[in-house]
Length: 111
Image (cartoon, rainbow, N blue to C red; front, side, top):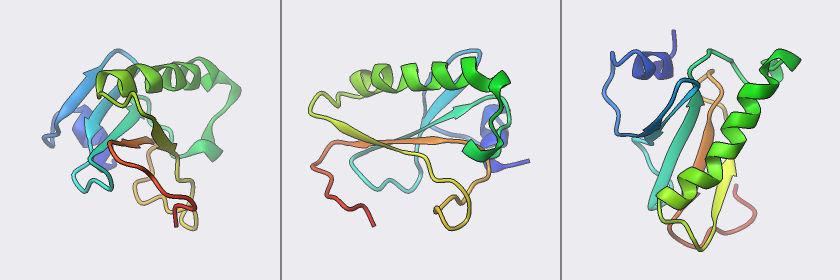
């Protein structure tokens, strides 16, 4: 069980900004930008590599939620989405999650 599963189950507190039947969005406890929210599926999916064709509706829902959340969070000037996959990709929690970052100019390359 990951920390994200514990947040979904309300075993660990989080500043939740959105929730529906399929996903949950909450503020990152270690923000890398003025706005840094994590969007996670409620279904446990380890990473992008673990997705199957059965997850197409879930992934579509997550992608469609990103711009809605960005608008809700006041990111009219733009934002960045990041999905880290695997250890070398920087994934530290092995539950699929989308970082939504904004609130300042974000440089490129990211790191």
